Length: 442
Image (cartoon, rainbow, N blue to C red; front, top):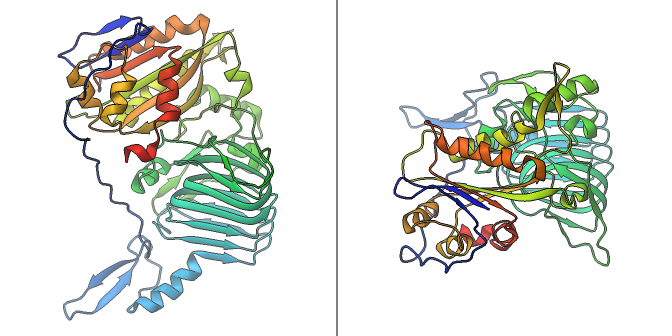
């Protein structure tokens, strides 16, 4: 089954996309231009230079008025190095509030039984020789390295995760590229699950796309072994692995209030699940991953692929936000009512994985084989990023999903005019989520 809403020049169609057609030709010469992104990361973080009338340069941190002012870069670097480095600590809690890092690097070395709450965006992070530590790490633009560490737990959002000589660790992960582990054992991974105020904005400041999360695409380079990592139970929360729920933390970037963090009280945890419908409150969509056997091997569920991209009009709502609207509309179908109270249906719709990148023309031609799409629509969907969502839907709920998507398409305030739904189209799912690599489209 194929369902699409296209631009005004096209006709809304619903039909069997298994009937293969010749791939449409390329719609323009060459490839679409890639949008350039300027990161907000800075080697001096919150510190900004200013030049006085006499030509003297000073560095100050406007968001942190109680911080020192420097007249030389060397003094600034010395002070900042102490601010972004933590070494040889035991039984300590280290917090960096919003507005106190703003794109600097961060270095952690030789710590035991410590908690780290880095609630701001960074450029790179290195963690070496840590034991029995807990980490909650906000957006890291590039790589986060963990080396020679053991018995730690972490919740982190990074450009890429790399581990070496790490053992017995639990990690709830957002990684925009495929994580790499080496010489490591008994690592357990799950999808990043929780949120705090302005986490999503911080991600966007360093170019991290919440829909491009490859947390379960682990590359294991450990010699002679291939069973060094496993998947945490579905819907593992931050509280489940950190065993502590943080208090509200007031930062210069605003109050850090938590959502979908989990709690020791099962009633609080259940209310978070019901009220958020898994995706509503979390900045990063929570996915089950392709290694979740109970989801992927279910014979009573159908693979559903929803593809969204921009139409020709300038959108008031960002495509990422619109994709969350789509995702929430489907996941809220999981919530029912029993004896006057909300309850989660079983079986339920599961979001398996998401991916987001800008298609190239040959990719679009291949993806849309067998689907009614005009040349104009193909050209338009290559002009900017796309978002793909792979669901497992109980067969008894397929009609409800189709109706929900058609409702979004028909809404008078619809913010996109290119939206496609495919059922059991394994070739399309494989191409978009596995064969088409991000590196090919950037």
